[in-house]
Image (cartoon, rainbow, N blue to C red; front, side, top):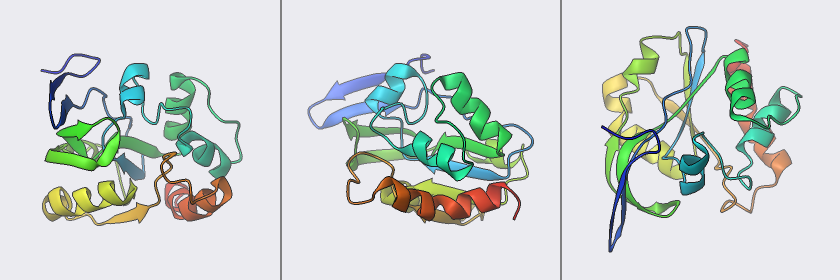
Length: 178
């Protein structure tokens, strides 16, 4: 069983990380947004997209023309008010730092836990690795396809904030039931 901070076992080729965060969802969520695995900074602050350089929360706030949430409670509230469930594709993996490209031995989360508890109509994956892993490890069992979105990570510097907001507009429309 993982501790609340997540457990890891270091080795020469990366660190084995067990996902430490509970999914964010309630019975009113319409969309499920999945990242790959919490970064070291997210594990440290104990919430999704915890690196201040990550633009996820700025994108989400922009979609609904709201202030950027500053605390974990405000982030959770923004998601639930807008019918957005939040989790990650992986329950565990071996990874070097926050590099999705280094992921080995991936084990998927049981997203049926969220899909069976909320009327999810769309799944969105943030970034290419999350999208590929979802399609390979989760979609065959869930039967629910995903829409891949660009990464909001600082590593995706080629996309400006405005471009990300435009790319994430399908998420807003689905969450709003449009």
